[in-house]
Length: 302
Image (cartoon, rainbow, N blue to C red; front, side, top):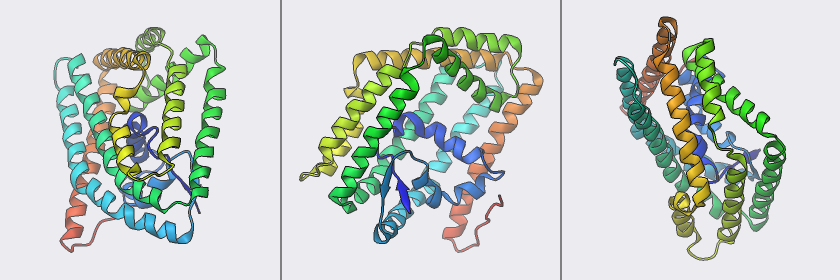
């Protein structure tokens, strides 16, 4: 089997959205998907390293405590976060502060998973041969070239259109079809975005170069990786950090405005979406406790 492993390069940026997308798309049952994360986690990544049979077994063993931790400690946090989101919908209007609070909650969730994931990622790194490490680095560099070709060839109009389509798709999923005025709100927001692809790719290249040095696996390399991951935001270029904060602020404002102009039908759609997701996480958390106590677990159907 080929193990796709995005070690540390995109966890902070992608994981919250990726994890939620994993749980609510592609299958009618959140429970069905979550109970198969031991299979899905290693495959929801972009870069490749081939493991032998013994390494595959080590990976399975390393994932067990990680997934147990996630079920016991993280799922209840997600339930609380979604409960807070439901409560916010009962107010006269969602505020920018509340949007930022939810965003921060998701970022912290991503940080926790990133930090905990290093336990099994670094342990797997110890298992790789020099040839496998070289393969990993080569694939990182090939991915960089693919991304540069995909994104940097766009002109400004194409960049904005892609950003608009992604934002529209996400909001359509949670609210249902947006009306003309709501779409105009998104168009205005997209026009205020700073172009991010060049700065993001420069940061990705810098991170790849840093990993190449760390993966020489000199004594103490594991601790060096942990330090590098923990300080990654602080070590990003000032230009990248300014761009990121600007774009997040623009998108948060657009989301607030669209949510606050939702119709009754959109409100029902949004509440149902959030409520169902919260109930799924709650059931999964309870299932984990029941399994620990010896009761049979309830497995969802696809």
